[in-house]
Image 1 (cartoon, rainbow, N blue to C red):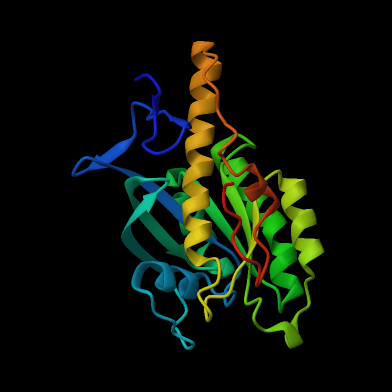
Image 2 (cartoon, helix red, strand yellow):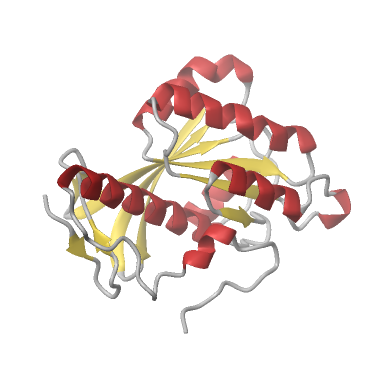
Length: 229
């Protein structure tokens, strides 16, 4: 299938042969990864249902579907909220095989959860047999500034190490919640187009001046989302 331009942007989109569609809309499979208690479920519920649950039972697996209009085009996002506990490692690796993009979440109030992201990324790379799987580093609970253990600069540094975007979020305040899900879809699209170009030897441009490439630097906690000029 050839690449086509997305409505409302100059950014081409390529749908690989195994892409899934539902009612004419492309379906993207997003997997939430991170240690237990970092707020993966809270972020997912805010995105899907616009609700915040401070007390939530530990997740084994929850799947949600949400329709989202991203850059002028409607898509369906299948979001899989996975368990962070070590006893569910085998189950989590199964989800990694099927996921197209991964939101790797830590809590800014817990240094250990931040350090664990390297292990999650290594596992994704091992399971997928590649090191360019679309991921985003997400520092959640940035509203709890008095309890912060991980600085914004540390989060940015890890994202630079992973060569991926970085966001700080607050599920409680619904800060940057939609942004992380929209951006991971863009990351998936860019990888699919990049793979297509490499395979076909195409010179299709993967970015343009209107693409806010500074997203890769991340939207920080309490910052205002940047808009195109």
